[in-house]
Amino acid sequence: MYRDPICGRLVDERRAVKLVYEGKVVYFCSQECAEQFSQDPEGFLEEEGED
Ligand SMILES: [Zn+2]
Image (spheres, rainbow, N blue to C red):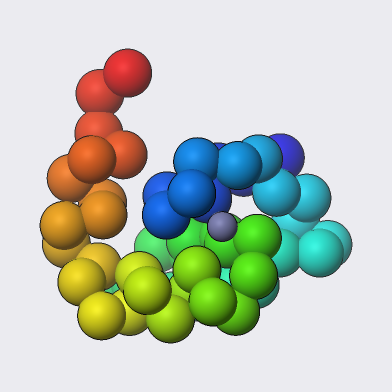
């Protein structure tokens, strides 16, 4: 399972929408979330940071 950085939901790899950003695969629950991410990828990845 992977966490969608946009909405915070856990997504199954087989169902996820995948996007490669700077060599890293990012998983999303939907195309909508992937599109939001692609508009501001750095902002979302910073939030993902330390937990
Ligand atoms: Zn999502």
